[in-house]
Amino acid sequence: MIFSSPPTAPGRARARLLPVALALPLLVSGCSGTHRAAPTGSPTPGAPTSSPPTSTAPVTPSTRPASVRPSATAAACRTTYAAPDPDRPVVALSFVVADSKASVRGTERVTFRPDLPVDRLVFRLWANEPAARRGGGHTEVTALSVDGTASAFAVSGDRTTVTVRLGGTRPARSRIVVDLAFALTLPGGVNERLGHSGRVAWFGSGFPLLAWERGRGWATEPPTSAFAEAATSESFQLDLSVDTAPGDTVLGTGVPISTTGRIRHRTADAVRDVVVAVGPFHVARGRAGATPVAVGVAPGLSDSAERLLPMHVDAIAAHAARYGPFPYASLDVAVLPDIEGGIEFPGGILLGHNQDKDATLVHEVAHQWFYGLVGDDQGRDPWLDEAFATYAEALVRGTGGTYASLSVPASGRRRVGAPMAYWEPRTSVYYRSVYVQGAAALLRARRTVGATAWDRAIRCYVATNAHRIATPADLARALAGLPAAVAVLRGVGALPPR
Image 1 (tube, rainbow, N blue to C red):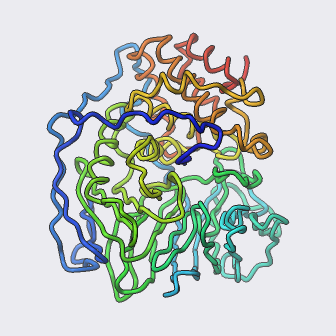
Image 2: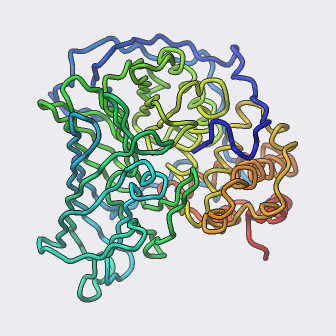
C-alpha cells in the first residue's frame, strides 16, 4: 500500500519514470465491458470463456535482466521458492454482488488443518476497520457452522474479530471444516480497499479471513485507522465464484476459469488474501513473459489502460530479475475512483487515478513479492512489506537519494520495526518513519556490504520464506553472513538488538 501524496511528506520529490530504454515491447488489446478467461499453465479442458475471444498479444522482452545466481559460497541458499504448505487451508468463497453495487452477500467454506493444537477459531472482518466504517461500510457473519454443526460465535468490540470456541482442544493436523455466511455493505467515498461508485464495486479482504500463523497461533492485532493494514493470514488454496451483472468485468485474485450465466469462476493455488473488482471496466491485456496481465480502468476515469499495461509489465520484469519469478499465475489491476495511491493483494492491485506519474505503480507490483509471496504480520511487523516494497521501487526508479534526504520525525527515528499499535496514535509520521526510513536503511545496508552479496542474500530470503509469514528474525538469519548490513538495520530499529 502506498499514499498518493503522503501527508507527512508534502514536498516529496516525484522521481522520474522508467527510462524509455527499459520499456519492454508490448502490443495490447482494449475492450469495454468484456472479460476473457486468461490463459494459464493448467487450463480446465473445455471450460467456457466469459466472452467471445479477443486478441491477446504476448509481451516479449527484448532483453531480460540476468537472474541473480547464488555463488558457491551460498550453497545453503534455495534456488527456487519454497513450496506452499501441503496442509494449507482450502477456501471456497462465493460473492453475490448486488446490481446496485452497494452490497455483497457471501458464503465461505474453510478446510483447516492447524499445525498446533487449537481450542478456538479466529476470523477477521477487515471490512469493519475504522476507515471503512466511516464511509458506511460494514460486514457481519450471519451464520456459522463447524463440521456441519451450527456454532455460536463472539464478535469483538471493534467488530473485526470473530471467535468460535470448539468445546475442547483439537490436536494439530486435525481436519476442521467451517462454513460461514456473511453480508457486506460497501462504503462510499472513502480511500479504502472496499468501496463502490456508480457501476463499479471493489472489495479487498471483504470476507472472514482465517487469522492463523503457523508456529504461533491466532493473529489478533487491533485494526488501524491509518491508510495501512493489520491483516495476517497464511497462504491458502482458493476457489472463488463471483455473481455479478452480465455486462461486468471481474478483476482480482485468481485465474479466470469459466463463466456460467452471471457467475465467474476463478482459482488460485496459494494466496493469503482476496480482492475483487467488478464493473464495466475498459481493459487492456498482455503478458509479462508467461504471466497474463490485465489492467482495467473504471468508467469516467481518464487513465489509459493501454498506457498502464506496459508499465506494469516493466515493473514485473525488473522485480523478477532481483527476487525471482512473478509469484502468481496472473496479475489484475483495477484503476478506481476514490482510491488515492494503491493497495496490494496477491495477484491483484487496486490503483487510484493518475498513478502512472509517481512511485505507486512500481511499489504495488513489488508487494507481490513482499507481502504476497513472503508474508508478514502486518499488524506486528508492517515494515517487512512496506519498507521492502519502497526499497524495491527505489532500485527500479533510482529514488534512493530522495529517500535518504528526507527527514524522519523524532517519534519515528530508529523505530522502523515498531508495530501498528505504536503508529496508531502517530499516523502522521508513519510514512516517513517506516516506508522512507526503512527503505533508506535497506539501501544503505546494500551499499555497505556490496550489491552482489546483498542481492544474493535477499533473493535467498525470498526463496526460503516463500508462502510463509516471515519475521525480522528470518531476515536476520538470511543476513547472518553480512554483519555490517545487520548493524545498519539494527541501528534504525528494524531488527532487534542482540
